[in-house]
Image (cartoon, rainbow, N blue to C red):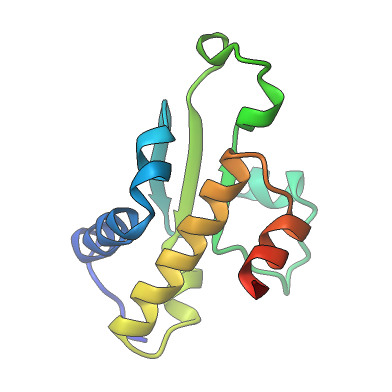
Length: 125
């Protein structure tokens, strides 16, 4: 897909966020949703990504299930959506919008404490 402006990318993220179930949106607290063109070298190293692996999104923080009710003791969580990998996986703006939504949902699921296995099981259901 051809490049898009950061403003259009952010608008698609905002639309994806608005599509999340309202009960989940209301439960999301102290989470920054940010963008980056690509994962940083530090993120790639931390996640042990090989040169042929890509990353569409990343949740960094302490999942709610691990906080034991002490939500105010933690720094803000961060969800990063990576623009260039998402563009590379998309052939149209509509497809990009779906990839953004799916990636955002996936990272929000990590915030709520779901593992990759939990997420994949819910996607199949």
